[in-house]
Image (cartoon, rainbow, N blue to C red; front, side, top):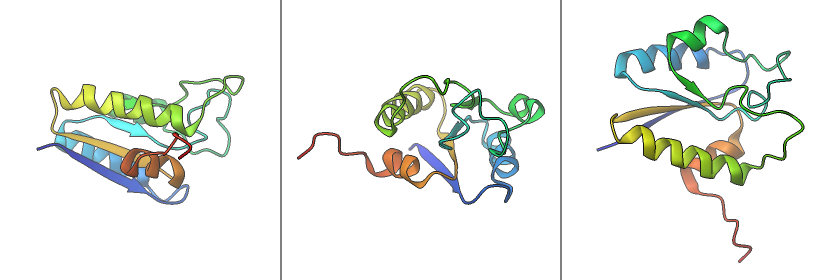
Length: 116
């Protein structure tokens, strides 16, 4: 069985610290679903993980885009689901952490892009 641990809430409540502790405990990786932390140019006010925190546990979707790139919640859903499939080949756990509810819902519930 595969598990996705989801940690959500407002900025600066300790989500990163908790996710790192859990990632170390379960020997798994972290997927960020914070819509501001995706962007390399947005360091101020986003509470992105520090270099030390990034080194403490493998993170995905942190500073992996430029604000000049078009990136939608649908794009994130596809990439996050593909990353989970990849991680679940060798691991039973993964952690989804962030404060952007729409992005969390896209992973947990799917994002209807069919227009129906």
